[in-house]
Image (cartoon, rainbow, N blue to C red; front, top):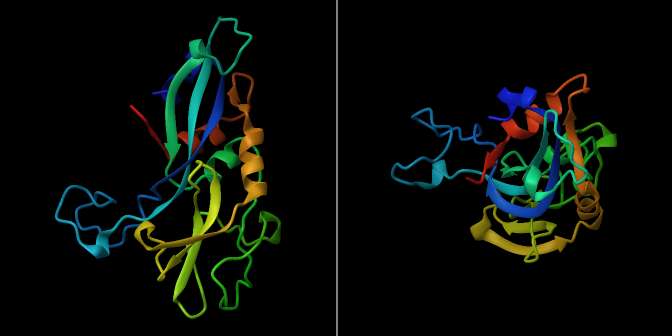
Length: 210
């Protein structure tokens, strides 16, 4: 476990690979009756369908203590590949970027459309992983994945943003994809850091691929 063995590294980096539509916030299943916090292997029924959202696939690299390496995100420094499960915004937060959030709606009023433009600066702190429902409740939207593995704002029929109800891509989210592209090979922790909280948040909200 990387978090339990930070003393073995002098620095850690992440490299983004793209968008993946996968489980989101495994503690949000209110119909859970066996403390699994997710669907599990029991008989499936609609009320217990796990929420899905657009997550970020990424690899983690680390330079071991007392080693010298010029290339940070190189094969020799590879640790493992992961994907977030609390939405792709989690990764941008970890590298110190404010995610470009698409939604904008008066927090005290019911929204009358399925998707909105916004930014973290408006103080609402909404996430691109949120499922926003139109005023009539007939359509909903959340960030999804395009065929090319990019992030895009997707619209769905119904109120739940289920992948099976996908309707259309309504915005390519160029600014968000630029943010992800600019992550490149970004350092998320070093031995001289005052805290490892960003790294902890990222890894505790991610699945490993092995």
